[in-house]
Length: 268
Picture (cartoon, rainbow, N blue to C red):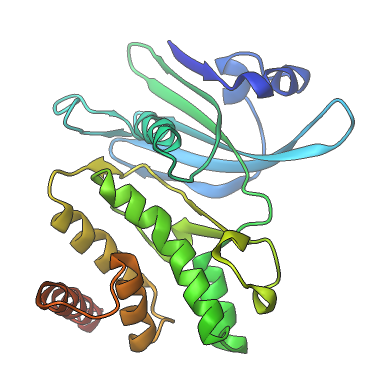
């Protein structure tokens, strides 16, 4: 059995009766995400709190799955559990300085007819998804041009870093980009007052050609960020590429992404 326990969380886990794989597997709580059944197995997510010695509580997410496999370059035939893949990329992101979730516990256990995995991560306290913020701004009014610039720079930075390391998120929806504002949006003056974290790395993969990565992830992002106006989308594109004016190459890439998004939306 493969097992990982974050040292700083070991005492808290033990105090809450979570010492080994079966303890985590036996946790009973309402599902945060109802189990889905696909890839020959199932997986689900719970969200609950753990008590600390001082009586305070810490919110965590617990993912459990059974026989839900995905093929990879390293596991092309039998595949690997999707949470094992996500745990691998959580560790890689941390090593590369790409902000994501902090893993607390991971383990996978295999028997003759069952291959199970558990992944527990820290909750992103105070963060909300970009999807939530886009809906709020669409309903109540957008931040100023300067504030939008700072937010776009903060969001583009980890995406660009991820792509520089040839990592394709493969599911870069606004709901998978989480933001924490250290000051109210109306008071933002620096990009450092904004923290961004990328979540849901189950489908992440290494890709040799950066063009393919950019096409896939930016297309996915724009396709699902339907609250963003055309000029805002183009502005984010320029910020991501750190350019003030589109070159012939960037014009070609922008048109290609826009064409794909429009074609996809016409098919809905």
